[in-house]
Structures are given as structure tokens and as C-alpha cells.
Image (tube, rainbow, N blue to C red; front, side):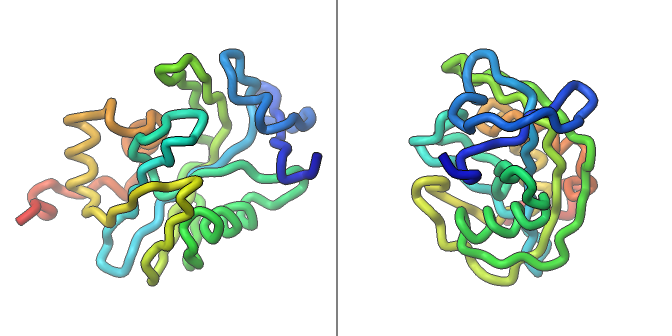
Amino acid sequence: MSDTDLVVLLDDEGREIGTAPKSSVHGTDTALHLAFSCHVVNDDGEVLVTRRALGKKTWPGVWSNSFCGHPRPAEPVLQAVQRRADYELGISLTRIELALPLFRYRATDASGIVEHEICPVYTARADTEPVLNPLEVIDARWVHPGALAAALRATPWAFSPWLVLQASQLHLFDTSLETHRSP
């Protein structure tokens, strides 16, 4: 097994305590592990939301933030963010910023699979259109933050739980719905 198949395990204080195969940490009794999320914004101020591939183990087919992933053991998180942006969306990022350094959540999907992560949240810019990796993403849309915030409030069940939780904490979504009405 290579390092690409391993995730970093954490104790309750967020300290690294080892590694485990990625396949073993997404089950009904998921160990706390390190991940990250990224919200990509374009030059028009729109946020990229993606629909998870139907083959994903957790929340298949659900709309989510731009992309997520797990740093490999000893891989800097920023490097992992750039790696996954290229792999999932075929984009290069600029102006990557740490927005929520201590974001943490535990959620159970309809099949009983648990996500249990300390998941720093980043924002970044992209000036190209995504080229979707169908193993990861089946659809993507650029949306105005206010429209996304309204959709998250109206139908939170249609989105990944981490996106709903992150959006409530991110200033990215602190815009008036009046200024972002759809035509």
C-alpha cells in the first residue's frame, strides 16, 4: 500500500497519532482523522459548488463545496489542496487562504457511514473553468454566494453536511440576498 492510500489519524486534541488505510476510516465507527475542504471563487465572486460522484462512499450524488480531500502522511495541507484541485477539477488555484483553521465535524450519511474529521477550510481563486474528474465529481456550477446561502437554508438535506456547517461560519456567505437575486 502506498502513502496515497493512507490518512492521518488524530486524537481528540488534533494531534497526529498514526495513519490508517483510507478505506478503513470511513465506516460506521470512523476514527477522527485529518481532512480539508476548499471553496473556490471566480473573478465574478461566484462560488464553485460540485455534485459528488455517484460512486463516492459517503454522500454520493450530493451537492457540496468545491472539493475536499485528505492530506497524505507528511504532506503539507496546502500541497494536498493544490493536488486535489488538479485531480478533481483540473484547475490551478491562486490566493489560497485558510478560512476556518479549526473546523471539525462528525456526520452520518443515510447508509450509516460516518465522517469524523478535523477539516481546515480554505478559500481560493481560480480563473479557469473546471474539467471534472467523473470519479469524483459529476456536475459543477458557479453560483452567487447569496443564492447558495438561500438554497442551503431552504434545502439543507440536498447538500453535504460539512458544506451546510461551513457556510454558516464562512464570511464568504455573509452577503445580502438582496444583492444576489437571480434574474
